[in-house]
Image (cartoon, rainbow, N blue to C red; front, side, top):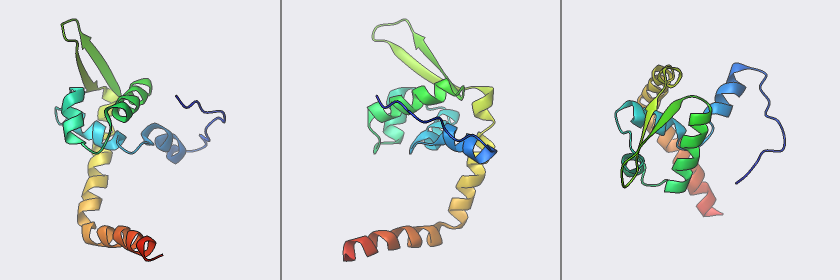
Length: 123
């Protein structure tokens, strides 16, 4: 697994939040766990574009950052569930505001994102 050789720049709140939430699926994982999707298989179904490996890596990072907790039940086959910590729950209003902003600007965002892909295909 990749190990960082250079210490991250942690000079301000934006650096800190970027360090904790950097990862394509982390915001969605937090949102879905808050919505009650606690098992890895449920999260995989909610985010089918992500591989199980990547989801596990990002869940582990969020566990290390104290945003989620993992409970392993001693049954066969093993059962694992994730839940948000109070620290992780404090991010949900922020994620909600970001989602609302995306919804409010959906057409414009979709247009500028697709414009980039269209210009790349023209080259």
